[in-house]
Image (cartoon, rainbow, N blue to C red; front, side, top):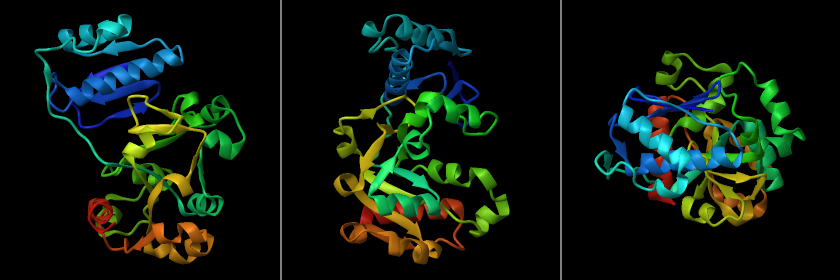
Length: 261
């Protein structure tokens, strides 16, 4: 895997390259450095060599040191690391209405390998050339984004992405979000960090034990409500989404989660 550190406004894994944005390039926040270390540890688990690409020699050499000497790399950049971090008490997994109905009915979130009955390598090969073609092992996990990050909807909409005008006017169907308390996911026995997602869980996650809230765009209420088990019914919430811009919807959901529950 190639790790490319840059200042452009995006962070994404694409075509075996992790494009990692530093918010104050070439300075690295404490949170960014911890994320890089998690990425290094995860890639080591799966025995993938890492190639570091960065125009700043100090940063590139420090990351290379973390790769070659992981036990001594906790703080190799004392002059560059700054103390501005991102944290959030919630993480969520987003999906489309058909998958969400199956998830609620079964009471479990499953990794794509469990859903499809295929290996990660088979799924990876099928997704070659698509925008979200992750490394094969990623499909063995349920992947979560931070609670206020709109990336989940980007993934759900990626197969037929709306125009900018449709996003601004709210003429699209957002994903259904399954929210969890981050601290509780941290204690799950199968949790893992890869330096890309907020957290991920291997193979399956029981909603009855962990679900904090499920946020459903109002237009999907009739399709979803009959599939919700009685014990999960109080945790499923329907919010009006049509006519609201993409950014406004993301803010509305997070405010609801933070202030109303």
